[in-house]
Image 1 (tube, rainbow, N blue to C red):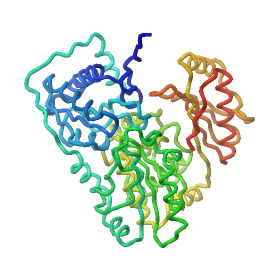
Image 2: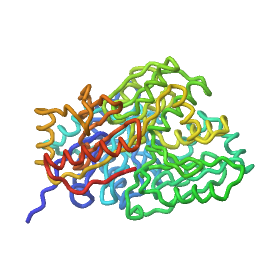
Image 3: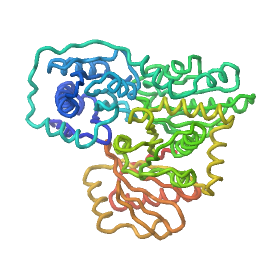
Image 4: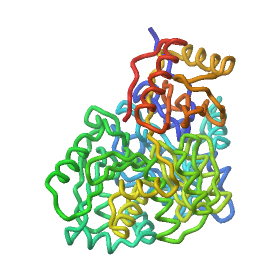
Length: 490
């Protein structure tokens, strides 16, 4: 049998594929050349240098692919700054913006399983390019023959110092450092063998409890995604520290493989996704730091977010899922914070890019200023607006694209009118199919942009109702088109 790789198609943030199957040296060189020429056409001129930033994370052969990308675009006449080490993806977006470059090409597959690698394309503005740009890259690939040019250069650079200085300028680091050194705050960080390793210690200037800081391209047999099932060591460490007692506040922070997504664990070892962190950060930025701008959320974001926006009199915009939509809004309007359910959070006072290390600094800053555990802060905000909810998500692997087609056809032709015994009161199709239920809460049915998966999201008044709805939705999907076993994330 002759293997035919899947077509090169950009998802919500870059092109990704299985290493040695879809993601090969030949294809990566072709995509890099096309991306470089599109970036030059989009962002060249106006005094901007013909420079491109090339970076990478800690995945298998990431640095070798990065060198190939750098040499490929150098041969096209571009001046290339190639990172001398792994670093967070936001650090390369920051470098593109700070160094007046055309953009950045970053070798990473973010949170995907270990057999994946990918290429993220960042624009000169310091964030992910939009679908209009990635469509031009895909079009460029048709019958594309790169023409070598003379004059390009290649030099290595360290992305960490400038990036760290940029983050430190936005946060009052000294009180955090003093709280740690005086034993008043204990910080744990699970960097999931990824590119956030050493990051918090660089930023804070003092040791913390870092977990999974070694390079492991297999990610301990899991995926570098900030979800409870992938961070047992961190959960156990916080629970052990809680049993031991002590006067200190405790915070656990979780970073995905390329450090642009975040989740947290409270002082008792309870997991908080970005559905809980975003409300805490809204409060911190708007009240404790006195910053202004609108809130941007995706359709999968918690209903607590609009209630807090109303409480504080902050404008709110809702987008499709994918941080590039939030970034587009950041480029068009002053934004306080923009965040998505999967852990990507960014800030209008920064580059238009999700940044997990900056989010971590803000979380530590609000803990030190308030002297409250993050779960206490989250509970207090729920009380303020009189709204409590629970959230979970199931990813259902699909057996084939025919299964996906059958599910889409069913949802379009016969949309759900009742879910797990409750009537549907509203249907939103901004991104996927979001059904609101009469008893409160919602179910979102959506297909992954990077993997053969059906994603089922639910927020409801109680955890038991969330479980009931998700299991109902899973059974519904399997009845329409049988799928592989589901993966529960919480």
